[in-house]
Length: 121
Figure 1 (cartoon, rainbow, N blue to C red):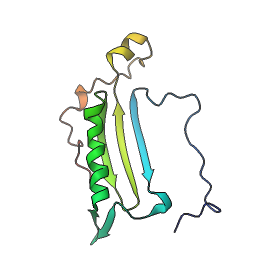
Figure 2: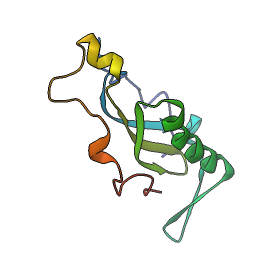
Figure 3: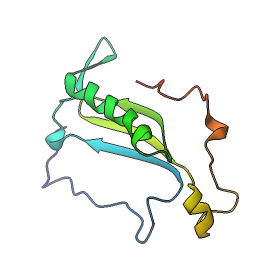
């Protein structure tokens, strides 16, 4: 089904007042404008990435290099959208600000070598 703005009304599901830079796991979906299949196609039940899809995947993994407190978890590139889970970890500044969640802090060590890193395609 093609996206029709007259029928499909989009609402933000963001929590008002929530700081999305806070440590935690975040599920993210990014859709291509007008749901065009720009990221690739599915052939014989396998996703074949286009150059644009390869670019999305490449830059997704660059997030962890650019932001040392971000760990890229699961992801999947689909023909017209992209899903991923990123983890924002506590930084030294967060821990000293008193904003860190007691018992919720992630230092990343528990997940190092995790079989999920970069395996989803």
